[in-house]
Length: 130
Image (cartoon, rainbow, N blue to C red; front, side, top):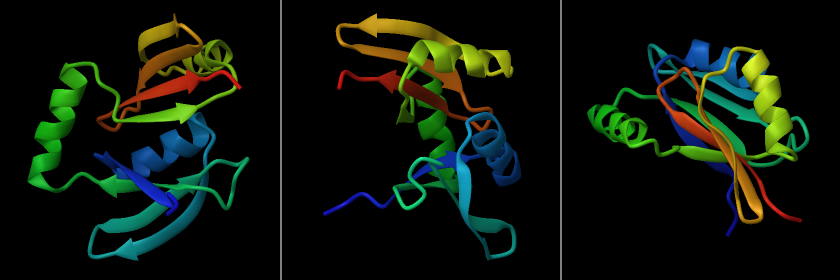
């Protein structure tokens, strides 16, 4: 069993595409129209173009709003991305205008930070020991 695809619900796919590619640095992998307004829109790490895809999924289902609003209210990230250096990535993203709700925090061997993806989600970045 392998993880090939995971998703985050987004309010606006065009806005999410810009944020996840232009700000976070992911690369668009698939962009296929689905239905009248939706797209099968995935991004991947430029370091792993054949790796796990992240689907920027429309947040149209009624249950999504309650789920995401509760996570955000409680400060719980919807997803976590690995980075080599949380502090350096925090500074890079902050300089690009990304709003962090948690600055880099060392928790034993793991360092994390949490930001708002502008599309309805909190995302955690983490550096883990090798």
